[in-house]
Length: 447
Image: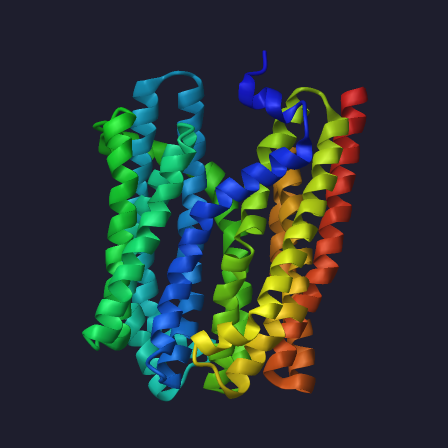
């Protein structure tokens, strides 16, 4: 029999459920991205183009490491949620502990590899001279904190697996609060510049880790005592789920790295403008990023109830909701474009790119929203690999040729426009493919 939460999803106003779940889920998610935006804001106040551009290059690298953490947390939270659903408290505690230990281990190993490869990575992104040195220094200080971030992400996933959405949300909210306090103190008052920004990042990640572990220990049975063998055996089921999730998550930072490399050829001001736009995007459209996670359970539970008509409606109304949010946020960005540029002390090409994003380009994010909704549908209808392929397609052949061609014609502005144009094609393709999956599942249900 359906529980009260499931009953909401298989009856009543689907559009309202989609809106409420997306809005509440977006708070914690947006807090993660606000952290990056705060860093960029305070560094821009130093009025040093090299430092601002350095944060842009560093952001591409940190996006990559964060995507790895998000992907791993998916597998851990899935296994914990199964144990919670089976009312096996001991198994949930064991899965939580094993997942955290694997997160620390793989997070540390991944951070070490990235740290050793930083000179090559920064050069590959196109950074040169003083900007490259600043980016390297910032990343060398911050990257070793990756295990703390992994613990925080996995812990937040565990809290959500227990149904504690509020505490899961507050994990990242507290991280943003700590960074907002430490950044001005260390960057401006102590005059530590990028070193201060990196140290503030350590503080933020420590807060995220602590705020994730404390409620798990205090409210959900704490931690188990796994053996080396049990942790080793736990790796297989976790990575069976996390592997595809990591691959899907890595598509976006890979595409962003390619765009960063293209923009680098147009100077530090262009990189700074792109970096600011890149940090504004998830803050402005955090609701859209959260939409895929919000609509998934609605589609899955209506599928379980045999209501394919409501699966189709949820898919359609999610697209309508995405459109309304993007139009509304784009209007706000357009009206506030001058204030935003002034806040970052943006001039010249940096200001031009912010103006380009705040209105024309932000509207085209609708097509990325189509991909998010389509991926959520496919993931819950047994076609997860299709989502991975669409994501990688969008951030490779849906980015590189368009950004390259328009970049030749229109410089840095053309690179960003080309990146957005590729999204139009893959957004429409993703919807078409998702509708085919829905038709196929519906036909199978009739049989």
